[in-house]
Image (cartoon, rainbow, N blue to C red):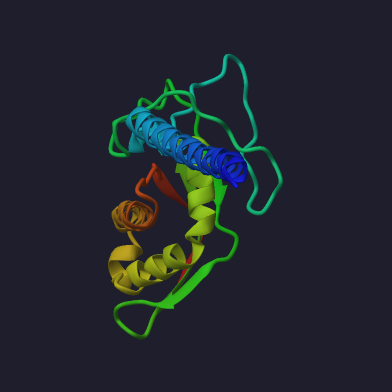
Length: 200
């Protein structure tokens, strides 16, 4: 009987030690994995800044004159290389390439006097890369809404003048950039151009 007790005692102790050792190893491995994940996550969070995800300015090509993407076309979007601190950065149009993006449908709305209406087609310009164009496409509904609201506030007598049209361009540019800043964190539209303008 004493021989049986001595044989079984070490076996039970050996199994318990192996089980305990395997549990400790598994916990150590899990802890190391979690620690590495936290370390590399914090490291990558330090490296990327919000402005790294902003659109970049597109330097003018030497002798290149690339066509602007048509509304809804599959033309490749430009890739910028020049980072800027914010979208209110003063851009030198001689150094950077402009992209025009036509808005497909016209805008029709009553004007402020209630008896007149305007039908307007617009195209947007940007010196930034394709991220701005993608933002414009993604935010098409709120952009359309704000353009209609700005148009509806216009006085037809003022809009009939050249100064009134220029003021409307500035108002539309500011309103569209406000939408893009609110929804995407970056404006980037340099100007609004009229492709058609009918006031009746």
